[in-house]
Length: 570
Image (tube, rainbow, N blue to C red):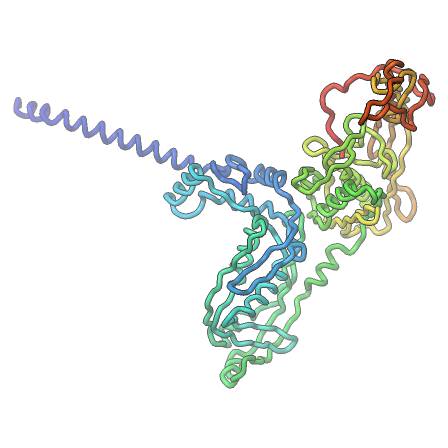
């Protein structure tokens, strides 16, 4: 018995050590597994992921979209040089209806570290955190037009080859044999174009040359590829843009008879009799069905000679032009137009700051939001958020304006119809016009807008001393205007008879100060002879003798600096 006890005692310690080591290893494994699981299940963009120079680490996809939209110019302009071996072609992005594809850009950023095996995912996450993972902003464009351009380039390659082409006619199928040689992979080239066109900065987009050896025509293979029931044209809305998916006719033919025609043919083209069934809904008919009616339109006027402001009005109009909203979608003017910065193309023009007019970037784009606001009301769509300017504007009746300021004041409306709607906006020749198209569910209904003034507020005369002006003179720095308040009503008529009148908005415009500069220059200084190379102070044409309460305004008060920094209204 003692020997047994000694044996157990002898082996007890190593056993305990082994048990502890196993437990530690198990605990470590569990810890690593938990960390790995937590890392791989992270629901935001991983650390170190950039779009160009923009860090979008640790953002959700929606947060990344907002940041990308704020940072990059959504209007994609300019030219791209496509190059494939010795074939070059410069294309204008505007011809391809190109724009910033925020969704695709954010999705690619989110996809980093989320493909491949567990170890490949972890490696990608580690590399992004250590070295940065930089992607370029994607664009969207008209794929069909780009495909045509790429095929034209492919045909110009040295020793050009081509894939077999199938052309469906009314009662026959034309098969053009493919030829071996050099070719551009069209699908690959389109993806490359969309991923890189935004950030080329004048560099050519180099397309790869591929060698193709097309298969000989085979009736069954052709039948499997093109035969089937007709498919109607359809559409989807992405990035507030309409994308139409082409219709596909139904095609059928006798496989054995077709193969016999192929076997007997020796030319480059083969004609096979087919039975064609047209789709009930074609691209053309779908486009007509989607936006058959003009729901509402409105025009405001601007001074075309004010070049910078006119440019801003035009640029903002371009950014909302051809926007399409699905039923239930909410349109945000700030999200669609984006930040008003010089880098994004906006110019300096007058804006409202507090109760004064000052130069600011983006001056004029409130005219577009105002034009859109009136169009939305006349289109009988739902206003979600609207704010009037602090001061009256000249391009719309009081009570019918809509101000915006990026980051603080937005204009929003909702497509409360059962069909998509399309915005068409233009600014040319001093006229800013916005029209909304869709399906008018009640063609006998019309909308009108009326306003009423509910109060007025007098302007103050504010005086500031100016030592550069001779004493006893006044120079008008800013002409004042009275303030007022207004109610705006939406009137709904059916067959010309009013069926509803509703209060749409209440607007209040502050009075602007009439600011006068009071000359305080001592008489002896004013009488001094002019020094060489300087000018004598002079009174401008707007200078007048001191006249308190001129024009029936409120009493004279000293000027007070505004508290804080008012948000510029554009």
